[in-house]
Length: 172
Ligand SMILES: [Zn+2]
Image (cartoon, helix red, strand yellow):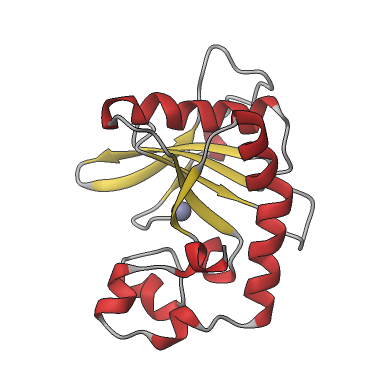
């Protein structure tokens, strides 16, 4: 199970040993992410979930252009996808994951619809009360921008205040 959160083709290719031997704090954070978010989500959707990216060691995070504050560095975030037999159903499956996290009111810190549900980023932290921040990542003029997520069928409406807009050149 831990291996799912450490695997990285880039880290393997470039021999980043530290990616595969995370500090104990990272392992504890990954466990908390599983217990509080991923396992309840999996139980609710009744289907397997792929972890595309969990922990990222600093070198890996820098290499892929991740934000310096990315929660992946601390093992607090995962990029997830629904496991589905047919690729054409992937976005619908990922939207289901996203909607289910909100509907269950899981204690996520940050939830991101990445590029029209190409995947879902979700984080959990033991450091503070969860922010319950919901964003969507879009590309604008070749740059990645994070906007408040807007959906009409939203179970728990978010303040639609553009001052909470988060912009970044980086990926969370
Ligand atoms: Zn992510």
